[in-house]
Image (cartoon, rainbow, N blue to C red; front, side):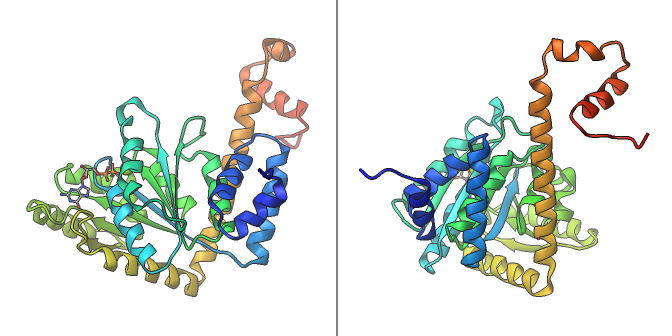
Amino acid sequence: MRKWTKERILAGLKTGNEVAIAKALSLVSRDDSSAMEFMLELNRIIEQLGRMSKVVGITGAGGVGKSSLLAALAQRLLKCGKRVAILAVDPSSPKSGGALLGDRIRIQHLFPNANLFFRSFSTRGAVGGINPYILDAIYVLEAAGFDWVFVETVGVGQDEIDIVHVCDVTALVIAPGLGDDVQFIKGGIMELADIVVLNKADLPTVASTEGALLSYSRIVENPPDIVKVSAVNGLGISKLAQLLEEKWQSLRDSGELYSRRRRRWKFQVGNWSKYFLAKRLSALTDSDLEELDKYPPRVAAVKLFEDWGCRLYEN
Ligand SMILES: Nc1nc2c(ncn2[C@@H]2O[C@H](COP(=O)(O)OP(=O)(O)O)[C@@H](O)[C@H]2O)c(=O)[nH]1
Ligand SMILES: [Mg+2]
């Protein structure tokens, strides 16, 4: 068997080879300088081949049907000849332990399919909601030429907000029977989402959730588009696909896509910086700190930064 050299991985990525994608993902997840060189190669591919994926965040409470919806949506897009990648983010809390399994199971029937890629990520080790490696995974998938990259996150606190900084377009999924007020108002995501997807429209109880949603959207300054779907019977799925496409195109045409991507870049730089700082701090030993323990904590912290060659105050 031929060895998967860096050159072979890059060549495979250009053609969307599945093994090459998996190898590239494990390469970028290495916490060393080889990952950085590889990121630069990815950047070159993205620029040379003019690759740009439509990156869509799918968020919402556990059980609203995000994974089922993504399976239906992926099926629809694959039928139109599109290449689709799904990244499922697992908040790795014991409470939502089943979420990951559900994510994979709901997409399983669409495999094998060379145009579909699925990977789950843990948020463990992340500083703030989004694991920085997920950001690099999006890079890999973009270089691999996927038309659509979906990022599914279970809405737990900060994740919901952070997803907005990671994706081009964000859709909030809600469903009847999960406590309407909580779903709409929590964390202000309703104001941040581009599209609100009301799933499980096949259930009779959808009417009251729809009513609550409409009256809530009237009091929001920039109300999102609302689309009613059913992941189980397919109602509204093609309309949702169309809406996502239109939303993305209109963001690109207005230039907003580029400002969002700029914000995303800045967010990612910040996220990585926090990661590196946390890593460096946790590597400090008691003897490293010995010299500093005569100072009050804030002064000690400033001195620590000075030791690292970073002056926080002018004088
Ligand atoms: N009736 C109905 N049930 C659905 C629909 N979509 C998902 N479900 C069910 O809702 C449950 C949670 O779905 P899942 O996709 O795992 O939700 P997630 O946690 O948001 O990813 C499962 O039992 C699904 O079968 C739908 O459109 N209608
Ligand atoms: Mg799920």
